[in-house]
Image (cartoon, rainbow, N blue to C red; front, side, top):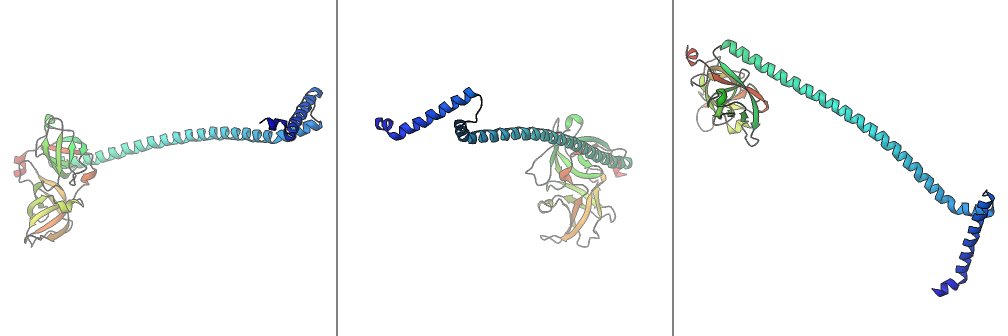
Length: 282
């Protein structure tokens, strides 16, 4: 280290630094920077000034862009909020439209059956693991609901109350194999029963089964409840015939029935809590 301080190179560097410092002092004393020394200093420090200037300009641009982006994001947020409000209004409109259709069909059914007593209910739960589209409604025994009550959507049968609890009820749909109701073709009067079928339920259909092989059912025929059971009135539409097939396990025939409404999508329904079964027999 001592040899370094004594070397000629070190002494030369020190001399150059000293001359530069003297030049800077002279420039300061003279009040201007046109000397040779100031030119040297300027040459040395100009790149640093250029870099600092570019950095400053970059910061200004970033600040400007950040401000612009903030205003842009605020505008996007405002538009998204407006879109959300419009979507809410559209959803309300669609719900109101669906309810109006529900009530219209129910009123038509009630005009034909003045002895019917309905209770409106909302779907409050579904089991995603249930392939038969069963659901839970917000009405129970406290509102007069009973096990076996028919569940309608407008004029169409969608299921029955499997179990009524005080504040809610569990409904099985007409797609469920546990569901069964006497039914008939309103044109030919052919009588049998409708039940759910695991295979057909995958496509949203149920089954009008145990028909004679010489059945006169035709495509599009309307199938309705026959009213044999005291808990189910006559004439509630179940659906229409989509196809007619022969059973593989016996010699009977069955019809594939397409329900009158999409059970999986309904969010409100009507529970038939009472009707005059004697008038149904007349």
